[in-house]
Image (cartoon, rainbow, N blue to C red; front, side):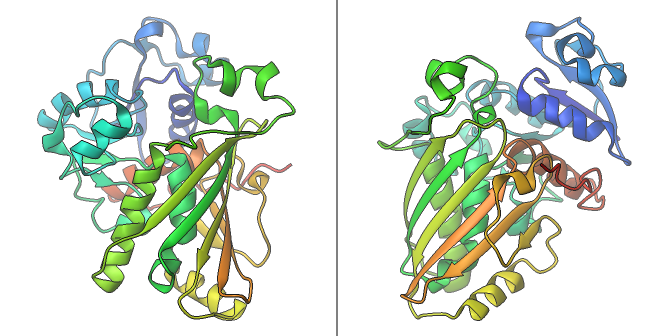
Length: 339
């Protein structure tokens, strides 16, 4: 099976190439990147030189494409590929929100292909695994939402439906393009910065998916999400701290059983007895979760991922595996790098 990466020149694209290069069941056949078209991939990323690939301007002959294009650009290019019958996984946010009005509000332009939103499958395998194999277009979740949704999904039907999410991310989440406040060394080193207090585009994504979990459990809707992201001076990783109030108190044992039952059989979610650190997921496709019952009706959930793997490229490979009928963990078996 020939796989192509659209826009290999960003962090997510490079991470995709790294993961697909060692995949036992597929062939990374083509990569694109218009700014680097015609160059050997090794000239752009020396660590990928052994792949022997040349960066192209456009894909030519692949069976499935994974797009790491930025928002807006993705929605302009991918619809033609989908209409031509190519199966596509999109890492951008362009097909995650089902409501085109919400997309326009949070992304600043009318959606270029609203007719595809209903058919695009939100690619969080732990929640939508049954819908992914037959999908033509997968909307890979955002990195912050992956951590937050997985951290809170087991709890939704048992809470007052008002969630506070405090998420901290490494600076690679901002991409390779220089932005003074989020990836300039002198600005981020030895500093922690909150942003998006007026609203962040990942908030409606989180709310949409938690609301879906609630509906599937209770046939009711209506969640309230307060989401505040932070940049911390590390390269990779997301640590989310999520807060919820229970309808009825639970013991720590009951809470752990709830989470372990919810994620039974999911290869990339580990429910652990002590709070994880972001370093515990570095380089892996794991989401490590620790729920903590405070004994006062409140629950605090710590959820950690590598933003470039489970939060982007690794999740895309997981989705690809499901679409192609392969083992879910094919090419993703590696343990985290520590320290």
